[in-house]
Amino acid sequence: MSKEIPYKIYLEESEMPKQWYNVRADIKTKPAPLLNPATREPMKLEELEQVFCTELAKQELDDVTPYFDIPEEILNFYKMYRPSPLVRAYCLEKKLDTPAKIYYKFEGNNTSGSHKLNSAIAQAYYAKKQGLKGVTTETGAGQWGTALSMACSYFDLDCKVYMVKCSYEQKPFRREVMRTYGASVTPSPSEETEVGKKILSEHPGTTGSLGCAISEAVEVATKTEGYRYVLGSVLSQVLLHQTVIGLETKIALDKYGIVPDMIIGCAGGGSNLGGLISPFMGEKIRGEKDYQIIAVEPASCPSLTRGKYAYDFCDTGKVCPLAKMYTLGSGFIPSANHAGGLRYHGMSSILSQLYDDGLMEARSVIQTDVFEAAEKFARVEGILPAPESSHAIKVAIDEALKCKETGEEKTIVFGLTGTGYFDMYAYESFHDGTMTDYVPTDEDLKPGFESLP
Image 1 (cartoon, rainbow, N blue to C red):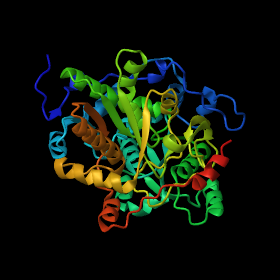
Image 2 (tube, one colour; image 1 turned 120 degrees about the vertical axis):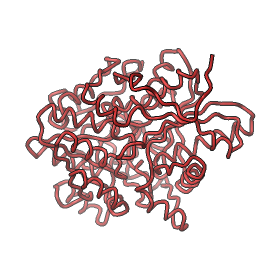
Image 3 (cartoon, rainbow, N blue to C red; image 1 turned 45 degrees about the vertical axis):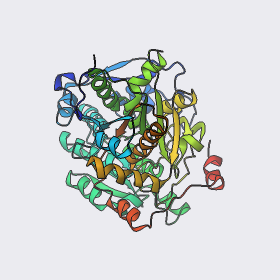
Image 4 (cartoon, rainbow, N blue to C red; image 1 turned 180 degrees about the vertical axis):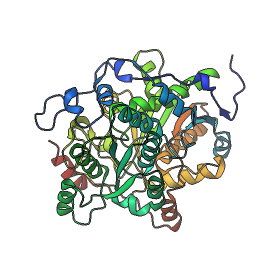
């Protein structure tokens, strides 16, 4: 029997997941292995250990273990802001005059303002446990860098962040939050690294990309004693940690007898979407239930909808392993006017495999439509959403309006990955009418595809 559903479904602390779920254990066609960039052979543990913490490298390579215990120290940290609420968007439903039921899993109720803290604290924990001095990383819009700086501060680790240059300039307050938590923040590409100098010589005046920033962070990590590199998305280890989102969502839905028809998430590198959908995807793969799962990406950086499924470098400097993924090419640099953090040239190998297997779909949306949806949501639901999250909001609204036309009472769940209070430059651009909808032409995408190894 279904219970009366409140506006916000809060789980008890005792109901929090105690394990992360590894969806690769259930995937029938396993994602292709990472390749060594020099030998083009599958990466071995001892090779990955040179870049990542040992335990994280083990998680990255494991596609058979279905569940990983969450260490007590991480669980205790999670309790500061988890479980996060699953919210029924009653006000949005009323505004849209739709028979659809809309729910969102809100991940912005922590100081970092996003879901990124779920993996940041895990990666910092394993670095501390290994006895390291510090870690290096990249950040796009700044959510990941903010989360990692918080996590490193908690474990007394040094944190070096390479921030995509256009975001560094557009989001000074995000940068200052990182510095408040003790991180050093460098605009990328920079003159601090060999790969940064090379990118600047080849692309003078470039505003950067995640691929550039990754290359710099990896170079510094591998050349500095006592440091390792950590990543905020894309990798399987990150997606694993983010499954706490989907597991909590499923527990909350099951608690009230709610079965979603569709699950929607924004997609850049894929960790938040992968984390949200993993337990539902597991049911779908095992034939227990069926769901419509939708990845939403920006039309300005459309790796799933217009990319090629191929092995590619994970970074612009071509120093990282190669991953088989939907990609625009490691040399692709998105438009500087794109306001969100969904700026990565490729997609998680796990999500790429699921998409290629037809288990999920993808849509691309233009930027002004995204901000129009964000504003509509903010005015009735009382949360200013991050530009990234607003990609999911846009498609959730589209689907709710379809239900209005057809009279179907579908249940829609989407991920609200974070808040947009540090993204006011983008909101200002939208309100002033200076925001543009750059969509790359086939000719624009050609150089990236030609760079595929």
